[in-house]
Length: 392
Image (cartoon, rainbow, N blue to C red; front, side, top):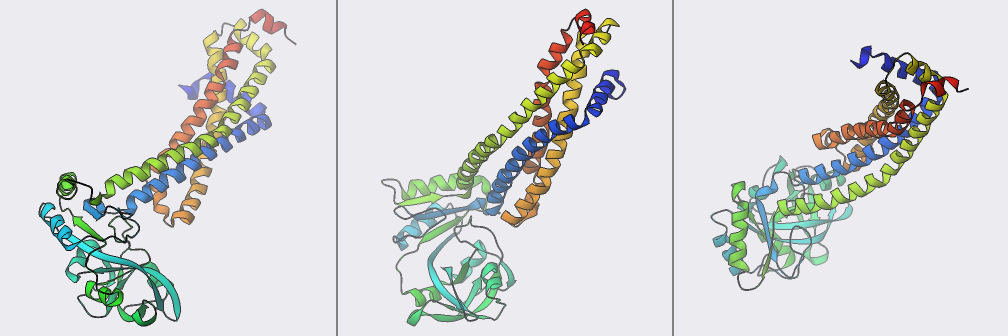
């Protein structure tokens, strides 16, 4: 066992005897592990936040006009016609379909101007795509559901009044509910948004013959792909007339991009770890040179080459473990602060995939140090006892 291994004790003794040199070597490992682990934590936390940002939206498929931005973002001058919406309903395999209209509009509340995405839905469809955190759903009248960030920014509560639109098309509505934040996966964002009835929407924006987008709410997640294929066959059989998007595909695409960026940044940060490895190599080579006579004595009393190798690898491992653990702890602290500031939710830090970066970072740091000590250890083991004892 290492704890009772005399060669491990000799390695610890040498680290203590050359304390300042050991500290300087360990600092390089601290910086290297800190850099790669912190970058890994940020990248993984961002991926987790994107994935969780879609919440439970895996069963919602968005259908939008092919010539528009489509998918989950952006608007379009093209619309889904009423016949197209009916085709979507027939191809949805019995799942609910929620068509809606949307625009970007000026708003005014508590004497302050702002802008928000305004959505028009049928009252019966609202519970299918959004949840109310405070207040109640709307069923008609000049009432609205507002996102929590707008409510906070304009100090709105249930019953507050807010003006939607500008000029002669402006209309005052009363806040009936505050939306629960569910990210942006549904095609209806709950950030900087206001939801009103379709009737009120058309009063504000004029009568419209079509819808900007439609959501198919697939109740059985196992059937999402089947429903998507059914929609594609029905609507894009002869030519592509609509774009069909689902959160899973978008999450995979975004995660892939974020993963690639994270790996690239971590790779750049890894250069500092390679510099630290060179430092460890130099320290170990100096240790071999300084302890030549000690090695000669050990060899002359019967210590085998593999024990000499083990002793020096222990020393490299001790330096690596100290530096890597400190670097890992620092990255967890600093990474946690950065995650809290950037993503405003420190809980992402404790996701298994995020914490794994700390474990991997520490392991890589120790591994690189041990590898850096292989050649010096091998060189020490090859010294002739007679030559070593004769060394000054």
